Amino acid sequence: MAVLLTPNPPPSRKGPALETKLGNPIDNYQVTEISKFERNQFHNYERRYSGRIEIRSQATPMYNCHGLTFACRRSGIYDSSALNLILQDDAYKEIPPDQVLPGDIILYYGRDGDIEHSGIVVSTPRIDPLRIPLVVSKWGKYHEILHLANECDYNFSLAKYYRITT
Amino acid sequence: MIDIPNSALSRLIEAYAIANTPEFLVRRFAGDESTKTIADHHTTQDIVGSLNELLQADEKPIPLIVSAYALLIALTFKDYSETREGIQTIELGTLEWAADIWRHHLRRHINTKNVLFPGYSHNPTEPGRSDSGTSNVDLTNA
Image 1 (cartoon, rainbow over the protein chains, first blue to last red):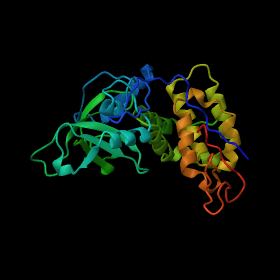
Image 2: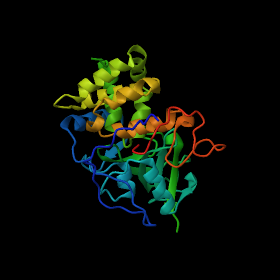
Image 3: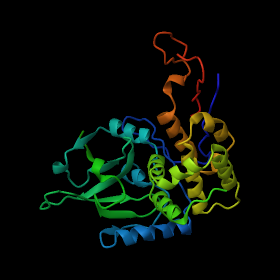
Image 4: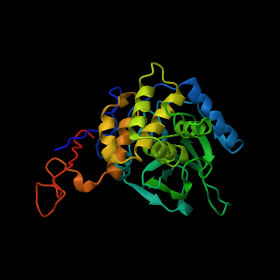
């Protein structure tokens, strides 16, 4: 039998013990390094979204968007299966766009069904007929950003909103 | 050494900068014409050779890391029968998401008829045996 193995993840991956509401472990790890070069890359986004986004924190690689949304900024969650486990175990329910409230979360899905980005709803417009909410999310290793849900480089067309209802 | 044009490298670096997950990185890189061009214009052996060369560098600035990811993702366009040997020769441990990317690739693109999981047979009519009897892929550590 031909045995083919994929490379193992770097052994240095470490993260705090996180669990879902049902006690299942959540795979996570912290990244500690960010280079000056990486920090400088974000200027491109600042120019592109100039006047339409607001930076609300320093850049840090310690957590990613999913770490912000689901892990209290303690660590990064990078695996879609871990995110789906959280949604299931923590009893998140999808909320129709017209019923979204501050505190709900937004998940941006990729074409493959993976969750490529997430954030927390900060406010919902009462007048705008499109009702696109303002969210806080973290873009990769960089800053937490306040932005309209559709003002980002992630796939808003497949975004869904969720809330813990129980 | 395979060169990635600066304009393409800039795009890839931008995508790398905001990637929250390996899947996002794969989607953005695979959707960039430069990655497909690498796959189309270079042999698997050339790409593996260049990737090895990049990963052996003492210092790994971001453009080098992004180039390495681009080459790795270019390999996912190649026939798996060509890449499965080459990938074993690459020291991918220095690329944070390399293992995740390759696992993602295996999940999505390898013919599942030829995958044998321990204790499980794909062939429902003949428990314990794969339908082809060849090319089983052990994903135990995947």
